[in-house]
Length: 274
Ligand code: HEC
Image (cartoon, rainbow, N blue to C red; front, side, top):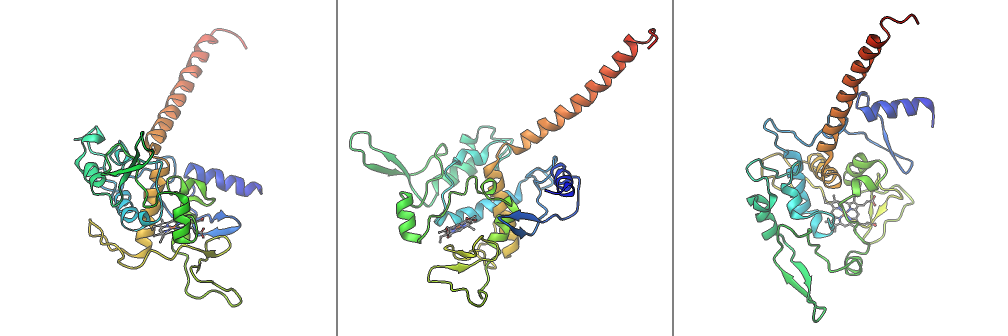
């Protein structure tokens, strides 16, 4: 790695550099996007009154589109209403009482599955706030059989892919109708410019107006990609805001502490020749 790259990466990590540095994913360059959660002060808040509009819209996309194939099995419904979550509310500090979260769980399109401890059979029931998001498929075998490939769990996908959020966005927007000459795209396969290897078993999903946003935002493919990736970034790191806040406090403390130590040093050595 060249020293300039290390330097720009360090600057980018600190969020000090406004320059667009192309992120890299398996040798592919992907377009760098300006995310609200980037940098040491980045949060998921984008409304004037601490609303998390983009994360909320992203959840709508997951619910209405992605959930018909992909699991999100590291998350429970209650996480949506916890501090920093899309439906966090000051009024309902306990997410179990949050009416939005309760409604999402009760109306989830797929049933929760318990195992009958006597017979070993699965019992389906309406999901509760404390449940993980139930998956449409019973298991990976069924998913692969139905879709021709296993859709990866999306809970940690932003962290799991090199290029992170920028790559996932590029992937969702990377479909083209025409594969380059000489490339054969088989049945059930699609050509995607961002996907390593380019041939993927997931059909393009983000068409103009595919969803009707609850907040009236125009549902362009780019808008939908930004929102679902912001939601997935939150899902993979739900305590990011608290962590960053603590980091800033620690740095402030260290700064103050250094000043105190320096003043103490001056005072102790004040009358000593050195
Ligand atoms: C009709 C089913 C279906 C839907 C709907 C769907 N996907 Fe997929 N997705 C798949 C399958 C199948 C794969 C695995 C493709 C493969 O391995 O070739 C996949 C793969 C992926 C990957 C992994 C790409 C990689 O680099 O490995 C991501 C990210 C992804 N999907 C995100 C999404 C998002 C976000 C949505 C909602 C906007 C969505 N998918 C909707 C079926 C689906």
